[in-house]
Amino acid sequence: MKQFWKSMLRSPSGVIGLVILVFAIGIAVFGPMLFPNSPWRMVQRPFLPPFTLSTVPLGTDALGRDVFAGMIFGARVSLLVGLVSTLVALVVGVPIGAMAGYFGGRVDDALMRFTEFFQTIPSFALAIVLVAILQPSIYSIVASIAVVSWPPVARLVRGEVLSLRTREYVQAAVVTGQSNTWIILREILPNALSPVIVLASLMVATAILLESSLAFLGLGDPNLISWGYMVGAGRTVIRQAWWITVFPGVAILISVLGLNLIGEGLNDALNPRLSREGR
Amino acid sequence: MLSFVAQRVVKGVIVLLAIVVLNFFLIRLAPGDPAAVMAGEAGASDQIFVKQLREKFGLDKPLPEQLFIYVKGVVTLDLGFSFRQQAPVAKLIGERLPATLLLTLTAFAISLIAGVLFGTFAARFAGTFLDTAITVFALIFYAMPIFWVALMGILLFSVTMDWLPSFGYETVGANLTGLAHAADVGAHLIMPAMTLGLFFMATYTRMTRASMLEVKRLDFVKTARAKGLSDAVIQRRHVLRNALLPVVTLAGVHAGTLIGGAVITETVFAWPGIGRLMYDALLQRDYNLLLGVFVTCSIMVLIFNLITDLVYRLVDPRIEFAS
View: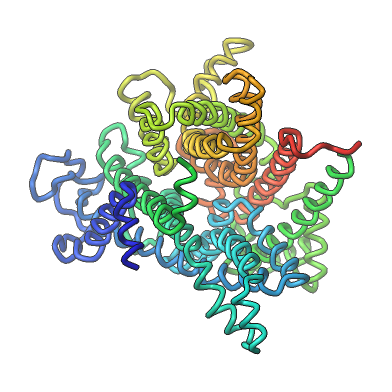
């Protein structure tokens, strides 16, 4: 573990990414306590430009709502949806991949055809259709993002399990009569974890992009303000008020960038052989 | 070669059938009784009309039979009727398809050419300032949501500089013909295509760079060098050709993302393609149209995947078609 942090902190992208993520999580958790202005409440005249009043530093939108407050509260939705939908995707993808890789044969064939099917369907289009049909809410959004993002997990885990299954220590466990579940959970999966962690960090980034795109199209949870929704709402007035679309977009950009950098840092730290080869 | 193509086509058709079946059940997941929804969309919801609709679309029949009718409809290119637009779904999609193909293919070409070019440069000058600059830009473009890039493009090139039109396919009411019309459409195409292409360009740049650096260290490159081939030839014929393989694979994987990006790009730029149609269907909760577009997108992805598979086989020096 110590070794892990050491190499993580040695990779510059990992450090920058970590700083960004910690900052973003800090805003998501504590921001709404420090700035209790509701992002839905009208606080000033509409279209107040940014940097004119210190109480509304980033100006107001078309309805006089505080853009800064929206960004603070939006951080919660973006990060929450990103993390939870990635977790759900892992819960679906890891067992499917593990079973396919471990049991092989027909099980593998069936599960992989199923996975490929989901990989072929255009993911964003499917997410749109699912959210539209299930009605937009935080649950339907998380569910549809999870539905479109689990296949790569299953494929990755399958590949890892496939190569680990033939190792001596796994064979030894089989010989000593351990159950399949025990072998998968205790012997194989812990060793397949590092590439999954790298993939998961990148998936959170993709999930945030997906969520913001859905919200931008009007498929966000109507009770929760999110960055994508703000950009979508400011879109029609972009000629009068650039700040309504610019700032939330920068927030998305920075969060996604941070997570991608963490992914690279994790890759350097967890697969040191691979990363050094790349240079 | 032929048997390979046939095999892939059969596989594609099976996947397509599965998608159509999925689609059928998605329609039934939509809130409310489909007949009632359709009647509501048509603006008349009395009992007799609902009953007529039920009979017309076979909604009073058992589910497997309904599924059969639906699949048969899709196979004969009948995707249902859009009551909101008062037109068959297939006709609406057919009208919009060319614009989407123009947009996505242009974006794809831009992103592939620019991405491979930048990636090759970065790999060639690995570790220098040029490499760092390209890598940082690729990282940033990779993290930008497409809808935001689109809006920033409008803000910069339409609102501030007034260089490019901010919406539409052509200048309304200009009635241009021939070359002038093509130039007009081209001017309208630049921003949407660049917007859509930027994210993919970043991906291809990163992929090409990483893959070039990896291939460079392989033994056959050393052999080529030992043979006394010039650096340019090694780079082009040996390194690039092999480094392109993962890029081709990635292009295939990204087909669906490209279509998804087109939905957003077309929405922002009011580009009259099927993406925009999907957004309109979404706003009006026109489920028939929505799912029709969804099936069309899936077919496009399947065709694109088939093409990338073929290209992979052609590019990969390790695979020779036994013919």
